[in-house]
Image (cartoon, rainbow, N blue to C red; front, side):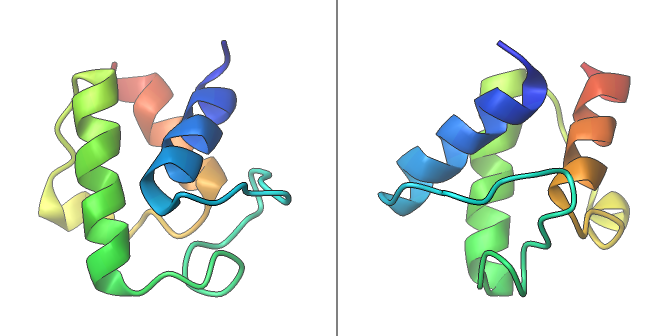
Length: 76
């Protein structure tokens, strides 16, 4: 399963809702309508799932799903 497919599943499990539009261009804050608290919780789920740690200084750079996919693929 690709990284983006795994992320979509994590997002759906975390929010309890299906995510119909989920591409590398999807922006967390505007397209997914997530606040910083929700994004932080989601990042914790992502870290657990992929066995990685995303430093706080990197979080501000993760604006889109594609940013997160690239980070995961480079660091797992």
